[in-house]
Image (cartoon, rainbow, N blue to C red):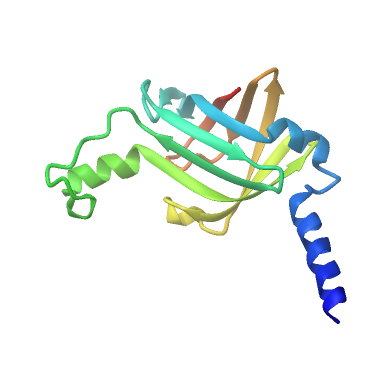
Length: 164
């Protein structure tokens, strides 16, 4: 009985650490850490950099199909109270409008050149549990994907550079 449990546990560990064979080829291109280059939103014919020119962001895809993403504007206000639970309405509004973070799992569709964020938790609660499909292009060390329904409205194009 004990030997059977050890074999089953080992098989489970192997299965959890190997990506789905159907997505392995493209997933290898995704795996790693990426830094934000730009996040441009087009809304009613007007393009804007929603997080601003000094924004920072990181996107991490791991080989087991998990991801985490954080985008933060460069001009967020410091809280006068020096306590994040005591921000004013204006301070809180600026931080919520100037940041987005979520994590969960991802699936790549090589044929359609798309991937889907399967969101577990997110700072924009409307996306909790959502499946967010993104069309993408990877060229050298750059990943560009589009979001047809950006969280602040409009159509977004997000560009990332692979960290070496």
